Image (cartoon, rainbow, N blue to C red; front, top):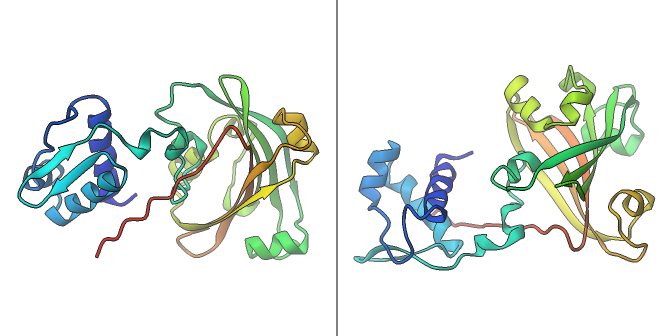
Length: 241
């Protein structure tokens, strides 16, 4: 995560917690730069993020004022399309309990389409993982995930019931370069009807994702299936020059 996003997260939490009350002024960029040991330019980028979210208003010569409304208050605003650290990371500040039900966990050889997406040949073993993510025991998201087994040694049921991305980042020390996402509205399939508790005519929001490592190799192809009334996504686009 870039430093300015990290700083924006700290400042956002302080605003939420009332450390910086509505109507008060944010500390100056010089003070914040000294606190976080960064340049004023980095602080400026962090404040730009908060400005776009509607948390603060900056005016030349008047400083930065804390506002009383924010796009970030939206339930689905926490799901950023430019974040790919997993659902556990997205919901780390949510009071509801996130749990995982492993529906399928196998190792198989990919068909040609999947092999092309993961940039492997058809003789490379690939994990197939189907997990139902639940919030306070209620169906939330159904994930169909495929990973080359050679990139994720030691993956097991216990990890799948917790956080795959914690394992990838903290245990395996993998470094992500980025991701590609494709969003579509879909008809529910048999898995959706059974596990998401949706009707046959309920629309499904699907996020198709391909995540790349720093060396350019894809580590994950997945399809996240969400019932229309349970989840949304937001995209924050900030110009930095």
